[in-house]
Image (cartoon, rainbow, N blue to C red; front, side):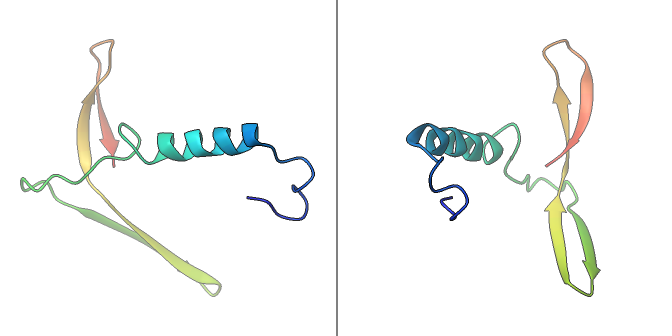
Length: 74
């Protein structure tokens, strides 16, 4: 993360914050492993003349600390 525009301003504090953010985005509850219990997978795709993308998700029921039940895609 040290491009020529950030080289003079980027510090160890920024590196630490970036690594913490990366961990937060790649672990539960944000990212969750698949269930192989018959829960269907959903494939979402998109594309244009500049590129394409896709993602595989599953619906999960999440119970919030307040007791409210929500549907989440992981």
